[in-house]
Image (cartoon, rainbow, N blue to C red; front, side, top):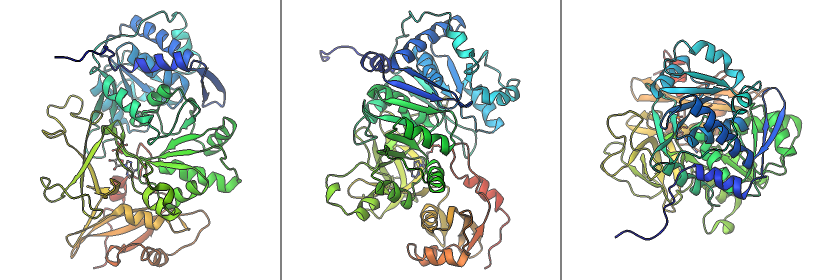
Length: 528
Ligand code: ADP
């Protein structure tokens, strides 16, 4: 027997229908690379997306075809998300910061048919065109070209309908080892993820919120915000440039209440605020993820009255995995206790399950005791089952996906990431968390950025060294940093050496590239 409720398939075009119907005039502001600004709203975004489906059909695009974008955050990019999925296509957001070999690989592997791009990335297009074998149509978002392309259409069209398990979006992981791998999201998985993202315990936004997402639309679907934001009918403020002066100016003028970005974005914002004295009086909620938010960052935001959603996730989890949701006894906790909790990666919302298994024996599930650290696994309806075009599933029979992260789960459900399986440092048979060393180092007032890597050691197998970028004008010695570390880390964890550099390499998504650092320090010799 089946139940007796209506058929309402979970297709993401329903989200934009809802936004245009219930929040038609809610604004979408875009600040473009040339400094100009435009304003549109949810009703117009929907209308333009429908026009785009008509224009795509004229190009011969069929349901299932991949439609790629190479673009920063702005309203035309937003329109193209809904236009691409509305014609039944699969939106493929390409990260412009990838290397040429990766760009070649992913567009060809995805078999992209159409590419929409920002004029700023014209040099990439010129370079890559001969290497991209499947793209038939190139459409520039700028210089009136996107508008001219959809202008002949009237928007009097229907969204393509189909199964809710049809694919709607494709994102590639940056591939720190081997080729990038594609994660193929479904209408259903994306819709469930969007519905979850608008729970107050997650990002805490609603129709009154004004969101400036700094996290790019090409990075893990901008954490799902273009879908969830539409479902809640929020006002978006987009900036196609990530200059902190521009971001702060926009945040204050547009009264931005919510923003989202990786820790380095918040660091740059703080530096700008310190240099100019600018404050962000309207900001209420800071979403930080992608890598661990250091303690001082949380303290600073929380002291300013900003609630921090410190979130963990990955491209493979759409990306929401956990967020720093407040516990029932939150109001009874001291500020220090609250920071102790926020510095962890938070708890799962309904719809995500996590567990840790032993690093040495993956069949052994670890207790949630706040001490046992192991390989983090995850499952749920918006967690990957299989990589795009892969022959075998990435998950086991019970659908647990191995994240590559090392973590501890606390009795209250809080997840504490301690490292990535490939970054954790093994010294004399014991594990040292590179992340904890880095966080401890970054709490020193003279340290702008720090990264720890393992270096071969004949006796201990590996020993940590710490690579440090000093703050402009600050002076500090390696010994002083080590002395600072002894306050929070065990003595045998102390780095064997502290090396100062002008810059630490970052990968395509702005995270420290340990792979490049290891390469840089390949011939480094430690004293025995
Ligand atoms: P990539 O693997 O290409 O860097 P992702 O954005 O999918 O791309 O990265 C996911 C990884 O980022 C996670 O597996 C985890 O290691 C790290 N990560 C994400 N959020 C956090 C966080 N809040 N704290 C620490 N690490 C995080």
